[in-house]
Length: 88
Image: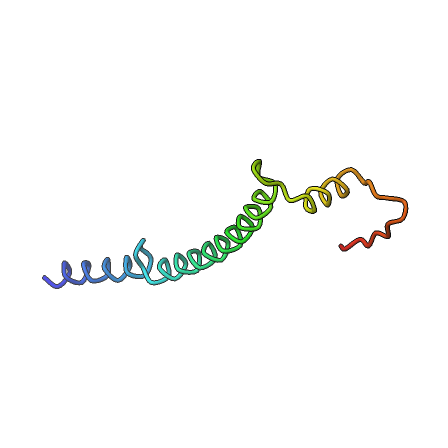
């Protein structure tokens, strides 16, 4: 007579400890969510930086200083009287 409630109790305890909605699973999911939110912030920052640079090179207004900087960096051109400081 006591075996059915005892089995039900043991099964409930097992799934509370090891099931999908268990405490350990919830903690792991919370840690994963936190890590993904941090990654999202990094990606958003990178995207904002790219948006800024794309805006500087938009078709209706090209920033000449930025265009000159890109051309010199990519092509390796400089004037003979210029001093170049490389920032790594």
